[in-house]
Image (cartoon, rainbow, N blue to C red; front, side):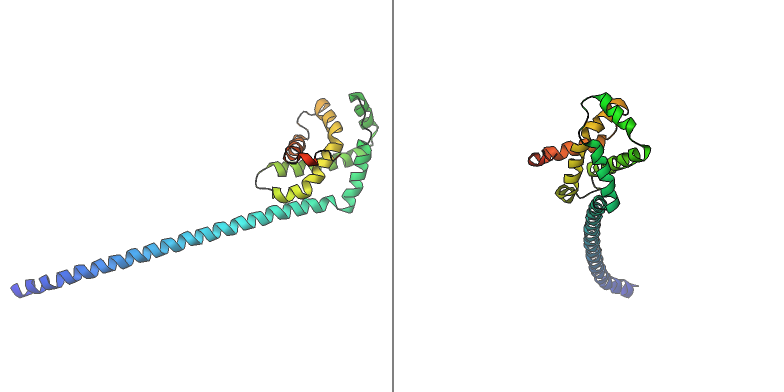
Length: 185
């Protein structure tokens, strides 16, 4: 029994030493996995941000392309004609709107609603690449607001106080950010 005890006494420190080494190796491997997981997470986050930016830019291009669509240009010409020489009184707008055919009214509303959608997306963080939108899309949207503003205000005052709120807010923000571009219309 003494021989077994002496042998165990000699082996036990060796086993504890091997156990410590195995623990250090396991800890180093765990640390390595943690570092790899953090780097993989950062790479995934960077990829998601790049994809989100690409989607935001693509949305700007899609909306901008709509403004250059031949049918939309025709619709815009009809709306511009309606906005030309705005009446000085609310009753003048009421008469002008009443004299507009239902088809023409639908076209005018469609043009205005398009820019309301553009403005809503502009006002919502993360939908559009605002830097890109400011270079062309918002220039067009702002110019249209300046054309439509007297009629939009009549609609807001007489029919729907919230009508075209996004468009107005986006145009105000654009004008504040770029005062040198303000007198477009």
